[in-house]
Length: 264
Image 1 (cartoon, helix red, strand yellow):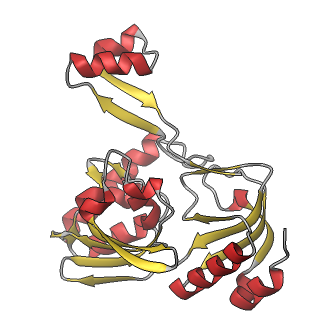
Image 2 (spheres, helix red, strand yellow):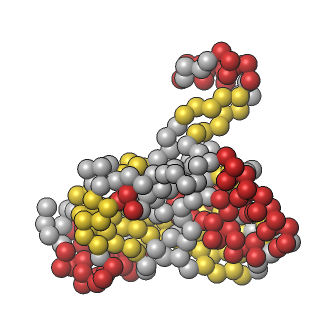
């Protein structure tokens, strides 16, 4: 593998980290050494580093907040690009935010601005870019409910994807099956009462603290919830999973799906 340290230092200076423990950047607190680790603060930086690594055939990986990723103890022999573009702007009910902004911080910012629709995300770990990519959701809300369009970097070009283009599904989107890199998200929220919204967020945080080991290495919920609507769906699910009879009685099952990126 070619040594691109000099070029990376030129691009990122003291933000370049060599032999960086990935365990410092993942919610599971696991992961070995990344050969190079940089935080991306501008689209131009992202474009330049991708040109460099692709020209030199160096492995690369884009990550957000590290909340939905398992990193190998053997590390990663390439460049890890952590999205650190965190700017946001509110124009009426229109919210424009860069992919590296933390989801919880954006939820708080929009609630304080009296905008409803993202308060459920106050307890969501990770970045807004990752949340959109996986159509994250909890407490009755999902990213697909508020996203209008997403700007991605594709083969060096900025491409705007409309909501229909994103093909949102349950913890699913077109983005999960492409090499597109999310750089900007635009949302439409609703006018709301800031006091009421902040009280709702407080309740959500209390529920999260009561139900999950926040002091331990965890990525929160890693299950997909399935509601069985009819016997046809039940028959199909029986073919795909070994479901205990006691669970079938409840007519609501949880199929374990590790909905994560694997970095190795």
